[in-house]
Image 1: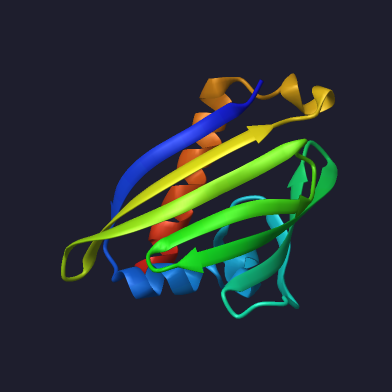
Image 2 (image 1 turned 135 degrees about the vertical axis):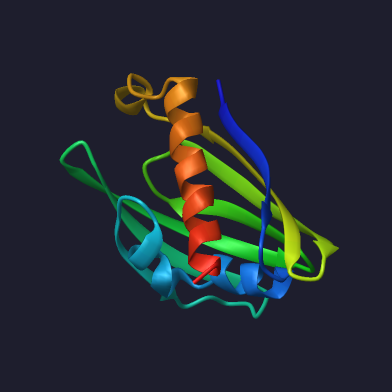
Length: 141
């Protein structure tokens, strides 16, 4: 059974700045909670951005490699390799007014058995909120 996280939030930034941050894997390690390493990988298309994130959790490290496919103000994310049995997510951006963008983030994933033990919905919601707030905070710098 899939687990989900979904939130909408207003960011005080233009959508182009948000898209640039979403696809800038190199900076994730500087602001994303638990991210120990992040880098952009070579991709075969101009509309795709591949990246690698390494997270520390429960005294272990987990590598997450994904592809971001951008179309206008939408970004679709798919896991290529990683700790999830299945993972997909999307960012949808819409302009509220100059300097304010409504961001809708949605993720759906399946965890392997050994991680399901820790994945109550309240924990997923807390972690997801921290990640979104980290993006918002990075944009306000």
